[in-house]
Length: 251
Image (cartoon, rainbow, N blue to C red):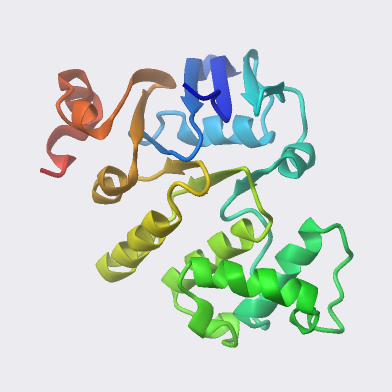
C-alpha cells in the first residue's frame, strides 16, 4: 500500500475540561476522498484546525508526505501543499471569476498582488486560472463578476482558487453548506470529476453527498474515531447508526 499523504496519530486537544479530540487517529491515502462525519460537537472543526495549523494539539502527531508537521504554522503547511477550500483567499466580489483565480495563482507564485492591473491580463496567470475554472465547471463564467455568481458558484470558485495553488491535499469543509438540491448535485458531480487527481478530506453533513463521493469514511463522536471504513461497511455498522446516522443513511 502507498504511504498515506496525511497520517494523524493519537491527536488530543483539550479546552479546559472538554476533550475536543480524543486520541484521534486517521490517514488519507493518495487519490482518495476521505470523508469525516459526526454530530455537532463531535470535534470536526477542532480536528481541521489542528490539521491546518490554527490549533496546536496537546498530544499526538501529524505527518504530511512523510514529514512531521505537528508544530508548523498555517503558512508553512500551505507552502507544503495543504489547501483549505474556503480559506485560500477571500473572494473579491468586484472582480471576475477569472481575476479571483488568477490572484490565487499569483499569490501561490509568491508575487505581490497587483490590484491596479487585473492579474488575468498576465498570460502566465490567466492560463492556469482558466484551467482551474474549467476543472470546477466555471469556465463559461470566467468573465462574470463574482458578485453576480450564485452561492453554489461561489463555492465552486473557492475550490477553483484552491486548485489553482496546486495543492497536494485539499480540505473541503462543508462545501454543500447552504446549497439547494440542484447546487448540491452539481457540486457532487464536480468533485467526482476531480476525484483521483488530488486526495481530499471532506467534512460534510449531507449524507447523500458523503456516500456518493467517499472512498472511506471516518465517524467522530465526542472527538473520538469510532469507525473508519468503506461506505458500505459504515452504512451497515450498528454502532455508527446508533451514535449518529440513524435513518440518515442513503439506501
